[in-house]
Image (cartoon, rainbow, N blue to C red; front, side, top):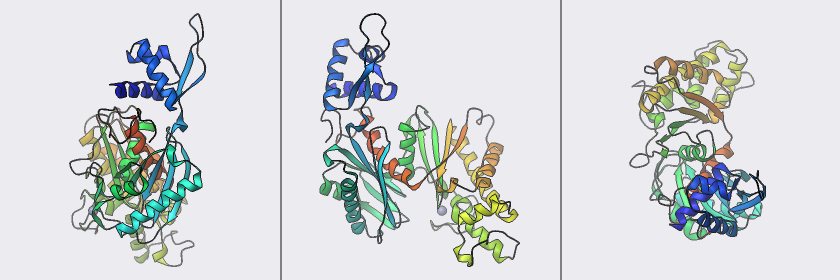
Amino acid sequence: MKEINLSIVLNLIRSHGPLSRTDIVQRSGLSQGAVSILTGELLASGFIREIGEGQSKGGRSPVLLVLNPHAGFVIGIKLTERAIVAAITDLEAAVVYSKLYPVDCLQDPQVAIEAIIQVVEKTLADSAIPRSDVIGIGIGLAGIIDSQEAICCYSPILGWRQVPLAQPIEQRLHLPVYIENDVNTLTIAEHWFGTGRGVSHFLVVTIGRGIGMGIIVNGQLDRGIIGGAGEFGHIVLQPGKPQCSCGKAGCLEALAADPAVVRMAREAIEEGRQTTMLQGVHDISQLTFDHVAQAANQGGEVALEILTEAGCWLGRGLSYLVNLFNPKLIILSGEGTKTGDARIEAARQVMMQYIFDRLDKDLDLIVKPMEEEAWARGAACVVLGELFKHPINRDNRIGLLRGVV
Ligand SMILES: [Zn+2]
C-alpha cells in the first residue's frame, strides 16, 4: 500500500511538478498527514527535492517539490550488427553520456554478452557515474523479444534463436536487466517522455534498413502473444517479388525501406537511365540511400521517381494501420527519415487517399528524424518506464521503498 502511495505521489510530482504538499493532497485524494510522510520519504531517498516557494493564498508561501532527475541513472544499450551503442540517462530520460563501440562477432551470443558487460563497465568508468546510482540496464535489439522471460526468440540480423540475454548479464553486473524489441524501446520512450505522452492510441513506425512498428493501445504497449506484434515491415503487399530479407518476397520492407530504394536506383542505372545519382560514386555497388536522397534533393528525376514509388508502398501500408488501429498519432522515425523527403511526402498522400471514411479526422502524422543515440536512450527508457509504473504492474526488481538499488 505504501509503495502504491509513494508511486502516486512521485508520479504526480514527475508529471505535474513543481507542486506544493497542498497541491498533492488535492490531486491525490490522500490525507495531509499521509502526504507529509510520503514526501518526507521521497525527500530522504533523494527522488524529489524542495525548491523555492510557490504562490501563497495568504499566510506562509508553500515550499514546492520537484523530481530530482539525478537521484538515479539508467543505462541503455542498443545492439546492432557490428556495434553496441550505450547511453546513460537521468530520471527525466535526458542523456548524460553516450558512446558507440564497434564490436565484431556479435552473431555469437557469448561474445555479445561479454561485449555488453565490458561496454557497461567502460561506460560507468568513463562517465564517472557511481554504480550504486544505477537503477537498471535496458537492452534493445531488433527481432522477436520475449521481454517477460528476457529471451531473444529470434533476431534475423544477429542470427539468434532462443537466446537468454538478460540473466547472464544480470548475474555478472548485479543490476536488473531488461530486454525489449528496439522499436518498442522507442515507443516506450515516446509514451513516457515524448510526443506520445498522454496519448492513449499511437504507433511508432521506423524506417531505415528495415521497417518496424511499436503499438500503444489503451495506454499500454502491445507486444502480442510472443513479442511479435508490429512486424509491419513484413506484410506482403506484392506477392512474388522482390525478395525480402525474411525469406519471403514482396514484403513492405522489400518495397519501401532504404535497401529497396538503393536496389531500385541500381536497376535504373543498369538500365542506362539518365541519372544524377552517380555523382561522386565510381562503383555502382557503393551507392547508398543518401546518394539517392541527395540526387532527389537536387531535382534528379529518376531519384525522385524511385523515392516516390517507395513512399507510395509505405503510404499504402500506413493506411492499413490507420484502418486497423484508428490511432490518434503516428510517429515516423528511424534513420531513413533524416533525408529523402519525397518518400515521406508520397507516403503521406497515399495514406490519406486510402484511409477509410473519416479516420484521418483527428490523426496526426509526425516525422521525427533521429540519431543512433536515440535507440540507446529508448532502451534506457524501458527501465524508467518500469520504475514509474503503477506498483501493481511493476516488475519487483526495482521499487521506491528500497530506493536506488
Ligand atoms: Zn519480409
